[in-house]
Image (cartoon, rainbow, N blue to C red; front, side, top):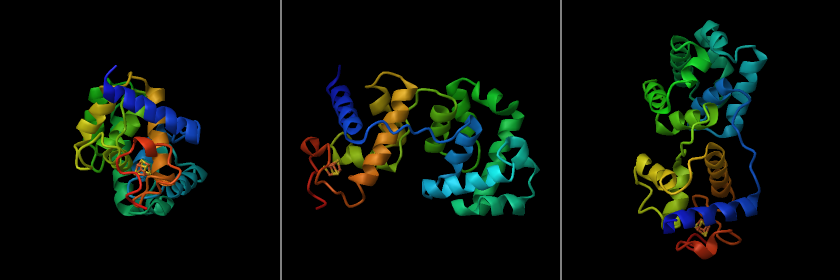
Length: 221
Ligand code: SF4
């Protein structure tokens, strides 16, 4: 196994020991995961949960339900997620793709690279959102990279900088860890937890489970 592979496994093992399994699958159905992946852009997850609860209560958490809603009503339902006008348009574009592809199952049955290209063609869906859908809705073993991932691994010295490209960061994980969707999902969830508990914008290094591995330990106070 490569040195990077060993480091990535050690980091995972420590995070798992420190925080426990996160049991984090963002949504009860694949469609809910897709909606959540889109709504979570630029907002906290609790706001997404409120928006999704409102869609559910209105009986609109389905491709048909969203397509049937008048624009102002859809905007109002997802208002808690912020940027609600823009997100309503994006949601409609995603639903259009779903319907054109024969529904959620039809879309998610596409080969992963093709699915990724289709998702990236939707306005407002970038690599992180597309890969969240590939991993958490379709169950493909792709590593989701977010700003937390870049921050943590730059501080740990495994990335040169937080400006490292999405694909390069993804390659670090996919090239050094076995392709396993459940493992990638748990790893991503643990990184999110770690970024909130310790490796914040201003890090709280005291008590960090990675501090003895981390060249940046203590630099944030
Ligand atoms: S020691 Fe500090 S900078 Fe390093 S991973 Fe932990 S919290 Fe982040």
